[in-house]
Length: 219
Image 1 (cartoon, rainbow, N blue to C red):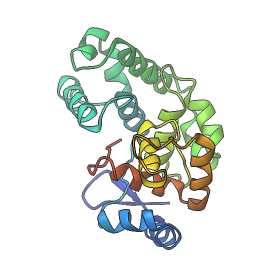
Image 2 (cartoon, rainbow, N blue to C red):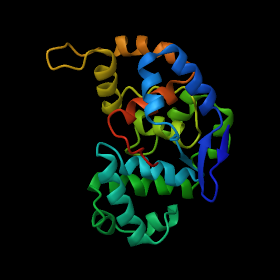
Image 3 (cartoon, rainbow, N blue to C red):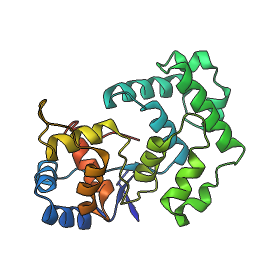
């Protein structure tokens, strides 16, 4: 379901062009966003641990802040592998800009990879909810982080991460008027709007994120 980007470990979904054509025909808001960001696509990584670790780092902070913390981690640890995270102290991780909680979450994630308690090889054949239920057993990983993993590593095309405040803000701005005097859309209304995007809700989400932050998140 993915193709390799030339000269990199990055991947892009092979369904992207089909999805953008379908969404552009159905939804005038997305048609404009797709045209405004021509040439850009969701890009994932070929390493499951790195993808989950980056999602933990990015929890509740901006893309720019998450990138800064990640670069500090790479500089401090040399390689981003479960073994190097497990060997690092909480103090070392916090010196890179992580909170005490995120440092503990990364160490627990590393432990799950080292002891094999995450059944990674089974995930390509499993449905989204089964994978989410397994991933959230790691400390600090909730549904949002698991959904980022589904989108950016497994390249699942129909994820709708409504726990994401940025997505909710983008939907309100694009479909609910977005003004301070306009009552925000509730989750049921957002799901109804998003039902028109099936089976490409991941793609619609990615373009709505671009309406707030033109620079794509890197997980």
